[in-house]
Amino acid sequence: MKKYVDLLDSSDLFGWKIIEINKKTTELYYILDKLETNRATCETLYNVTVYVLENNKVGASTFDIYPYMDNEEIKRKIEVNKQNAKFALNDYYELPKYEHLHKREINTNLANDPIKVLEEVKSAIFSVKSDAYLSATEFFYNEIDERLINSNGIDVKQKKYRLDIELIPTYKDVEIYKMLSLENYDIKLIKEEVKTLLDLAIKRYEAKNLELKEDVNIILENDEVAQLLSFFSDDLTYGAKYQQININELNESVQGEIIGDKLNIKMVPYYSGCINSRDFDSDGVILKEISLIEDGIAKNRYGSYRFGYYLKEKPTGIIPVMVVGEGSKDFNDFKNDKYLRCVRFSNMQLDSNTGFFGGEVRLGFLYDGKKEIPVTGFSISGNINELKKELYLSKELVNLPDYHGPKYILIKGMKIA
Image (tube, rainbow, N blue to C red):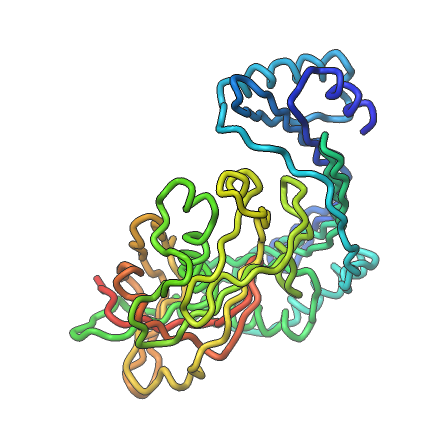
């Protein structure tokens, strides 16, 4: 690292940043329940950003350095990226300065022998019985050490463990896909998740094309809930305000005249079970919790150091995890009316500028007042700006990589085709 710092310091730059990543992985690849390939890797990567100052504007360019590169090759890379940065000039902004990082205790049962961890998890997964099966399963155990330093004295470190499990549940000629990403593992919960996924593969095979002659409520779950609610957090970023594409202003309702549940959203650096948690962002800014929305009212903004500097606000940094307060409804409360629960999308899309969202649904469940019927072959669409006043959130909560909050959301007035 010192060699790279010396080369950057002697290169007549406005500033620089180095992110050092040391990553160890243990990987297992299964076809059915038979091990096909295993692999262990150990790699070090240096991601470097150089900053230039020209005509009171700041430009930046990023490149990678690998341990096998000699000094001359690195110097050439620095010079090339100095020139590149001059073609990407922005209004002047300072670079972040040193701020003390309080060391957080690593609390994970993944910090053990990876072979033992993978053997225990693998045995649990393959012990789940169903008429469906796992046609392929891949395990990726990661131990990651990250260090970030910059020319303004920042020097921060963090260590992370994560286990990614790629699953392909299959039933007859139907396959579905799921990636489980864990910072801790609970054998009972993993087995429950696998059983649910295998059952979904069967339901996907049994699903019939939707025939609907009346409007019904739409229920989204899991990742699609997080994606939809990110519309509100994204709108309250410094970048949206600076570029004048934001919809909501502080101390105003983000939902208009609220009929349904009032949103409570905060951004936090760490939430147990959310694997995208981190202590500092990619600029080295130390992250702290901030409340964005309270009872539907916008309270604060957050975002990158550069845009915070432009708005003359103390930059919060890019905070990774959105935490949403629980709603007013148990899932069973949704059964007071007919609904269409959308479980598997080909790809739900959300336009953060216009508010339009929707997509093709590969698997849904139509509740007819008595039971859920698996259905497919339809799409949903709507505009969150028109529907946001009447959203109903569940009391059931879920952890996702960058989200903790209601597992389900019920929306009225969407179009079904």
